[in-house]
Amino acid sequence: MKAKMKKTARKAAPTEPDAHYDLRLYVAGQSPKSLAAFANLKELCEVHLAGKYRIEVIDLLKKPQAARDDQIIAIPTVVRRLPQPVRKIIGDLCDERRTLIGLELSEKIES
Image: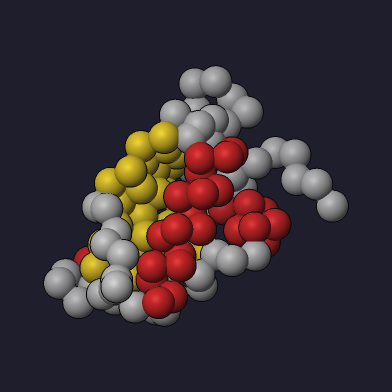
């Protein structure tokens, strides 16, 4: 049974109370890596960005031209569009520490 990805998810709170995180997850269909990336990203956001994020899932099988906007060269890729500067990370986001550092989602990261 395949899990379906939601196009937009709102939840989870950065250390700055007024900060809002705008994230785009680029995937290719419902592949296992795409599903894992979405699940991992959503879980990280729930824990670290409660109520202050938006995830937009862009399926490049349906919108291949969308890859040009954020210069996507591999998938899955998540792009943090807000707050600036733009940050990107490629992969299924299973390494929580690497993802948090790469996307600068948390100021305090435990060693």
